Image 1 (cartoon, rainbow, N blue to C red):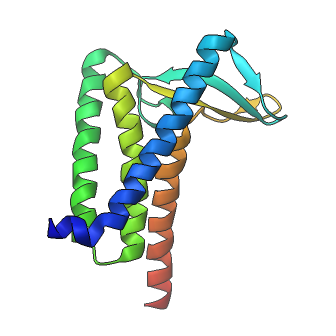
Image 2: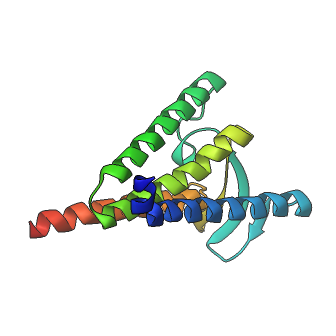
Length: 159
């Protein structure tokens, strides 16, 4: 119980990140089911599309169901490792960064378990060049990773 009291804010960050992702995914899935369209054009460089990703980040490593289950177990182990790292870390900045990564990873892990795929829907593009389609969890995880990298760069620069 002491660990929770000491880290309640970081668990709250995880929950908020997870819920933000869930709300956006539920909205997008519902939108595409009710509108019966393939693409929703937001701007000249952002489309909303619904892609079911059975691989890892950005649709990489899509393959058969055995490898999919192996990846899911690996992701679960990574989340568990990150939670242990969060609890052991002394740096609040590092804990926030890890909390963002865990919250986003839990969002995508939840989808892997419930849907057997992760719904990706943000399509950034310039003319005919389209970046990988991604979701809110991917943004949250990426933000957490960038913050961890920035922390390491700043610490090395001023250490």
